[in-house]
Image (cartoon, rainbow, N blue to C red; front, top):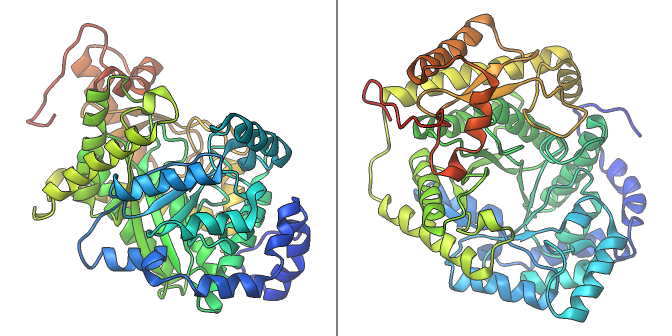
Length: 496
């Protein structure tokens, strides 16, 4: 494997690597003719191109709505997407890939396809695009009117990218950090970054021939109380790495944490700081958009309460000015939602967005303070990565994770120190209890400690790990902050 460096691959390197990638499963031969794949992409109407929809949304003040969804069999998957498009009023459509494919276990995915075909219903938790191949993908993309994105969770998604891009999908989610650290246990970070350089160079190759594919780093990471500075730093790093390989449409994302002020500030800071870093790196031509992910943690089992969580996430997405929002369903706590539940989640999201259409932006001192803090923290993390890599962002990313200067809480990967422990403050904003070696200065650490001491005093207990445990399960139990048993909501200074 070639040494990792943040430099654009020459086309010859990409083309020379393709035969080994396409040999990963028998359907790879369907994507061998890259010029044919590009020619097919050129026939797709602009109305079905993901990047076009995103380019039109921001100037119009629109927040587009996109669900998560995917089943095993082609006809059933088409029926599902058509229902989400027709009855759910989705602006953008997903194809969520099954878990076997995410781990490159194609033989097991094939067994799941055969079992599904025999029983008539899906035995996989997503769409096995690699096994089904280019022609099946084209059946899916041709059957709907809205743009479709591939959503998955794959450290090595090279073959998946080849087949789905040849199959007519116009957006591809993930990145070498965000689809490794939160998803895999023992995949070396250097390897996944190299694999995603291949994907981004492939997307760049399409772009050089007039075909713009949208790329979206996965913002929420582990989805469990991730401090905004960490998720924002990872999103910006992945955006910069993608742009270096020639990607021209990038959507950076953020997963809802729950405090409205912090969530709005975090997405605004992410957009502004990512644009700044792209321009500084010579990628000012890249079209940048944002995505807000509704609550990624535990959901209440009661559907009425779940709709409350969905609505709250939509409020934050609307006020943050997100280009799109990823909607959830009222059956999140029960497993894979039905099509009907997904549709109801979409319609709930649409209703809340419609009610915010004419409202003024949310401007408060709390948002300004959170924005200033998050931006300062994110800058420090990014600067540390650059220093560790001696100016090479890819090398610096590997070294930063090795040193713990960049870390992700609650991640399964051996590549992360896992020493950062987040917790909520009195008002539900995410703070950091244990920093490990995270590259933040002493003043910032003291600010976090003061936030936590304020909560401890209000709750009549010490700052301990018990707060973390309480907070992780709080939303599923109907609240944001995990209070000690028997204590009701605490109000201070007029803030909830």
